[in-house]
Image (tube, rainbow, N blue to C red; front, side, top):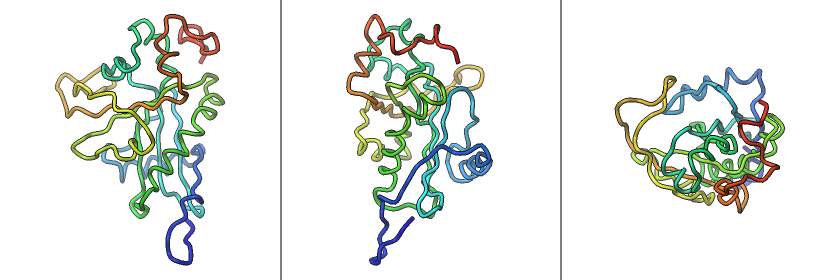
Length: 210
């Protein structure tokens, strides 16, 4: 990250980009070392980002397929179960967000999140040939207040029921409820996702070829 003569950091020098294939091992290693949830396998649709400043890695982010079930999110959208099945691929989950230990500076996290959000749609479209309309994320209130997401105008949709997704479904015992944040990627995203007939420019899961 570039420093001014006064020793302050210039946030406008921060840039984000997708992680290259030959960088994925480093990305996973850092995530495992420094994120309290550890690394996350790349399963299904996902895009990993690195934020750089002065050619140094300062933050790591994962955007993955949306959660299959989230009552608070579904109520906020207002869609039916049938619509949810057809349209879930139009959502993505900010499944990991890590500021590397030596780079905890004011406003850096908000800047990085904003930069990722602004380019995610085009990156997702290029990689998976369909758009995104809404982002979601889950924040553990025993660890964080969700300040970064609030500053980037994400909405609090409610709380999870405390069940954790596993490789075989959902955990049988409850965990700490998480705050559910959502962020429309265009102003009418909620309307588009909940209306009876989806605009034809947004392919449904059943007709889309991955």
